[in-house]
Length: 214
Image 1 (tube, rainbow, N blue to C red):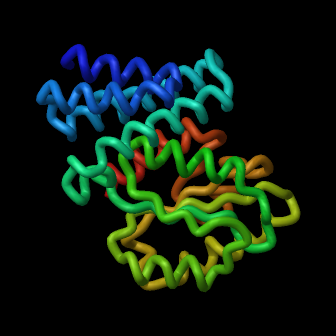
Image 2 (tube, one colour; image 1 turned 180 degrees about the vertical axis):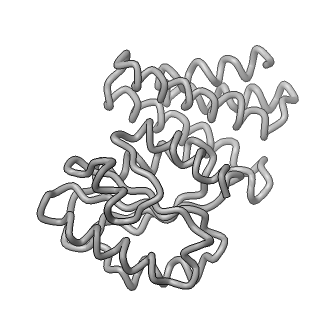
């Protein structure tokens, strides 16, 4: 890793959004490969941030700040990347299920998954099943559908959504991952999801694991 890329990496880990753009530009000016800046300087940095969070060394707020710093860096890097470089691991459709209006956790998961190297299609909150299916049919190269339910009262909606996806003809081509405050591994297994994550950092690791298994 070049000193310039290492500087980008350190700034992302520290969440220095105001400085990371200049560091990325400096790395480009020094002749560093844009894809290496992305992967070594940013994606690996976010992996380290996720591990720190998993070890309870940092808080959610610090992880969010690091993800925002990465976004600032990607803005500078984007024109220098090939079209698919920022989504090299594939597409992920993410949504909070219908009747659930919570998005903070879902947004953080989306940022972490994107930081891991996926292209994220965020459908937002209160998303009907038909919209999720329609989005998949418009993006048949999607690898993962990630669903969030933040209330015990919307757990049945999560079950219904997964049930519907399990009946679709494209089910064998995707992995379904679920999460949210009331969701457990046992519930994920019960409704037929492929994976469950308890937090955003774990979700990014799970997404990479599921994509690699396809």
